[in-house]
Image (tube, rainbow, N blue to C red; front, side, top):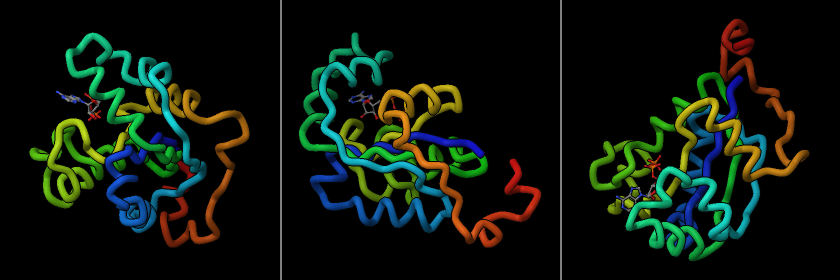
Length: 155
Ligand code: ADP
């Protein structure tokens, strides 16, 4: 099964949306197998958003992403990277489809509530960036038979 990184950004923490968002993740059937609160700093953001460090809005990313602690999660499931990315919606909250997390909770291109890894390879790199060894647990719920058919659960 795939694993992907979710970050509940300061925009989610400050607006007390964490319960609703974690509820959506669990309701969908994604499995949380790592979760912690942490304070980000510019160094980790320069790595995580390396593709954006030269953009004029990068300083705003740093200030918005360090405005409060964040919650980082490792989510597990069949096709978890694509499934969670689709649940999150496009970057700009004003353009995100209703029903997506950003489309339901965000009005901003920047303060857009949640991060989701965009590929299996990036998910692996990002999970290593945010979690130390031992913080991602080998957890499979008892209720797997209610989440997947037997052949799907092997994927
Ligand atoms: P995504 O988070 O949807 O994968 P990107 O990797 O392109 O999108 O951007 C990372 C984050 O940087 C976005 O989630 C958003 O918070 C911020 N960002 C991206 N583009 C802009 C922009 N044009 N203006 C302000 N913030 C932006």
